[in-house]
Image (cartoon, rainbow, N blue to C red; front, side, top):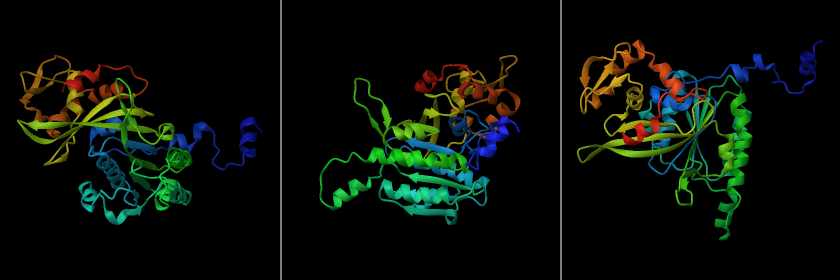
Length: 349
């Protein structure tokens, strides 16, 4: 009997396996959304997507956090027809129309109202304990940032005005316990959270809830936004995904996603900045865009305005006929050197 066989025989943990044969490393689902640059923000690849584990979507109010979560959850439920969403709700700000906007069948959503961190912890661990790896479940918490601790609730009921120091500890315990279940049972968890500005000469956005969230999360996005205007009229927002932490994507990457009042999420938004940086698209004149022949550098096809670049007809030839997908992967995936510096391009666009 080899040493490996002896160790396997002696272990008391039934999930133990040789690493090269481990289902926890070799059988990870990755669910793509229909927005290529959201897939890039999640995985570094246009063909990647949402993987099991904890993804935190953080930002100020009205920064599309819940909608990003539902976009990803909708993609998961579309891929797995028997999948169920476990929706923990502390904000009650997501009407049924939100779910319908992302083609989520609300009869496949288990809505669980929560009032404090401990309530969430006990129910979530109980639910995870009862699931098998073959069960297709996606969990959404909306939101962590709005949750009080049980002590804070009890103090309010008993009319005590003492400071609560237990919330960060409770959240750290929650995610410390949850993380192994998500990996071992192949479950994605999307947690909406808030940010605050740290003190200092150059303050930056910090994810609320203490260090436990940072330690446990596979992905952390901090969302910013800026207005899209036509003249003086605001037509929508461009949200910038700042990748604070990722297992796959280079940290501090910035990915813009546009949302219009009329059409919702612009499926092909965010691609233009990358294509311009890689010379897959160029400007033949102010306000005009054209595809570029990679071998000759010449313009291809009809030049179009920016709004017309947000179509499948504009992007499909670039996807099919060039190495654009590989360029994006090298630009954003951990382990590859940046092809171009995107920060200045996105900040100025």
